[in-house]
Every structure is written in C-alpha cells, then in structure tokens.
Length: 253
Ligand code: SF4
Image 1 (cartoon, rainbow, N blue to C red):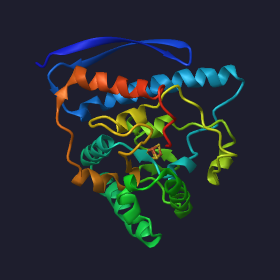
Image 2 (cartoon, rainbow, N blue to C red; image 1 turned 90 degrees about the horizontal axis):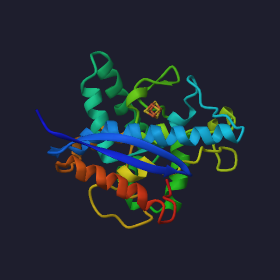
Image 3 (cartoon, helix red, strand yellow; image 1 turned 135 degrees about the vertical axis):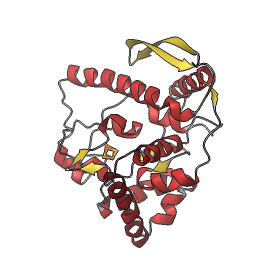
C-alpha cells in the first residue's frame, strides 16, 4: 500500500479563513492523480465566493438547463485534457463513441471557421488576439461534447474552468456575451490558472499552457504527460502558483 501524508492548509480567501486537510501520496505521483484535489480546492474557493455574492444580495443565475457557457471556448490545462480522455475511455459503449464522434465533428466546423490551426497552438497568441478568437468560436455555436439536454453530463468531473464560471447577470445575456452584460462571480484565486502553470517555469502574468476543451481528446493523444513527482511537492507547487496570483497582474483568462 502506498504511503500518504496529510497537510493542513489554512487560507484566507477574501478575508474568509478556510481550513482544509489534504492527503496526497508521498511517493511518485502522476499529476493526473491530483485532479480530485484541484476540483475540491476550486469548489472550496467557489463556495466562499458564493457566500460573498449572497451577502451582497446577488444571486447566481446559472441553472441546470442553461448551457450557453458550454458553447464558449473553455481553456483547460494539459493534465485535464488527459483526464478527460481517460474519462471518455472508461465510458460504456455506445456513449464512448457518441462523445468521441462529437469531438471529431467539431474539427471540420473549426477548420471551416479558420479556427482549427489557431486553437491547436493557442499559446502562440497574445491576449488581444485571443479575445476575438473566443468570440468567433462562440459564434460557431459548437456545444461542448459533454453537453446533453443543456446540462453537463460529466458534472462531478467537469474541468476546473467550468467549476469557476458562474455569473450573476441574467442568464439570457450569456447567449450573446459581452464584458458589459455578463458579470462573472469574482474568485479570490483561480485554481484553473494555478494548474495551468504547474510543471514548468512560465513567465509571470501569462497563462500560456492551455488546451481548448473542444480539442482535449486530440491534444491528450499527443501530450507528453508530466513526470511523476512526490505528492507533497505537487501540492506545494499548486499552492505556490495560487499564491503567485496575489502578487502579479490578473491572468487574462
Ligand atoms: S464540461 Fe460540462 S460544464 Fe464544462 S463546458 Fe462541457 S458541458 Fe459545460
């Protein structure tokens, strides 16, 4: 049986103290094995933000049955692409083939819109170039392959960016999103950004390691998985990357 260590984490999120115990294997650990921790931490930070939203007398308008944001360009970390591919591989048939077919069907649509090659190398684009690309992507109306009856079919396993995206503006505004009309819930820190920066040094202020969810299956096949490292080292890096966010300009995505 592999040995594990438990760390007690105490954080102040927008002034709200949060205490959590996180257990990780002490031996070599695939970054992929940290996914449940990324999810739990993101959910904790979102919960704190939701309490603050309530205190301000606001309400989150995201509801099951509203999948407008699931047609947006969703950035995920390379390790999450691998996670999604494993998730798909474990699906029973015919569901596995159905999801794979949706991913495959998106590629010609993106090609026709002139987006496919760009999205295959998203890290080469500046933030100014990415915004119009995101809008053009949304205009294509390509639903996330996991969206079914306007609800997320992998809700418990959805990527961190999906967990972090909540709005207080009227749901109908998400069908034609603009920075003026869509008000996102502000988070004290973004686990999605921290995860995307794990594994190698990246220039500060840039969120450069991401994969569009719609190309997750394709990218996971070519992505060279990060080497295993001791669990405590991975956890330390995750928190270092989270703390970085308080010391630098906001990440663009
Ligand atoms: S994974 Fe789920 S929540 Fe995320 S974009 Fe797809 S359907 Fe929406």
